[in-house]
Amino acid sequence: MSTSVSRMNTIIILEILKKHSSLEHPITNSAIQRLARKELIKLSIIDEAACMESSDSKASPGKISTSTVQRILDELSDLCYNYPSFVRLLGGSVRILLNRNLPIGSGYILYDPDKEDTDYSLSGKTRYYCFDPILSTEEINILATSVAANPFLSLKQNQKLNEKILDLFPVQLSSSGSGNSKHMILPRTVEQNKEHMKNEKLLSNISFLLSRIRSNLRVQIHYGKYDLEKHDLVSRSSNQFTEIEPVTLTWSNGFAYLLAIKVEDYKQEDLTSQIFHYRIDRIMEIRDVLDEQSHPVKCSFLQRLGNNLDILEYQKQHPVMYGGKRQRITFLAKDCEDAPLANLLVDTFGLEYFVQKAGENDSIYLGDLFAKEPDSWYRISVNATAAGTELWAMQHADRVRILSPDSVVQNMQMRFQAALQLNHPLNQNP
Image (cartoon, rainbow, N blue to C red; front, side):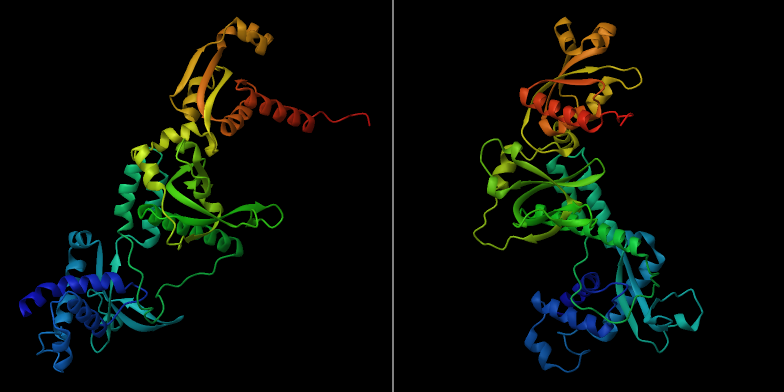
């Protein structure tokens, strides 16, 4: 039995350090011993009754002695200090810390065997230990965000990579530890603090959503809107929370988006038109769905998509990430030498568009513009959402005219009439 215990000691101690320690909250030899015994009992490697009967920690086969823990910790720390390849293998370093008084209160300093300063000596001082991961939680968040926002990954690739990244997250500390961080934190200005809190909230929302997507869990979101006078997010309606089935995350036009299905609107047919887009920085609160009767619809959704939702292609069909049902939209557009029409189309709609030269029949829409430059005009058809295409056409109003469907044409006419009324020349002779 003792052979089995000795073989497990190093692995268990390393896992304890990963789960229950950090630079701000290191733990002592005795704390590690207690946690190690619990792990060995849980694994049925030692007998709990035998462990309780013996008072001699060195003699009992059911206890890890202080000297054993000390030896393993020193060996791990030594290897991490001297061999960078070992640190990469572990994913971080085993550190020895010493408690000392600092100008801002009590804190810890890292033990450095190369320094002769008495502050860095182990003699007569309580040693603390921790696991210092190569990647911090913030850095893992950034990696996860980058993968989620990558438009070139399919849904399946996105989920697979994020599963690996989420495994890097440290387990939440079971003990708050003691002492303060040795690092001095400079106070932020009010504006810096607001920006910092906003970024932290965004990363927190992304991390939460990624974990729920990975676990195929529904969530409820409180989606807000910005108030013009308060300069802050406010509720959109009295019914604050919407239950959704998160599908994936992506990035478009400088913002992170959640793609999801509204559970209350779910129908078996035409699933792609039921995907809603939520800007993650506008999500005020997210919470889990605790109703046991709430059954996910995602399994059916992903099965019908074959787990191959192409995020890049999806973005091209939803210009500026406006949701809604895709439809065939036809318009006339002018090719310009300084801003080629092909670039304009591919950047917005991808390669899935139909193009042909504009003909005489199109001159009724263009008038003198066609007569002056007949070879510069093209008739284009795309399969995209109406709202996104309308906004895109407004951005290029001097070179684009929508022809069909009628609903989109009418919307564009109302937009232009409103714009002309608002931007009419000022009366110079009141």
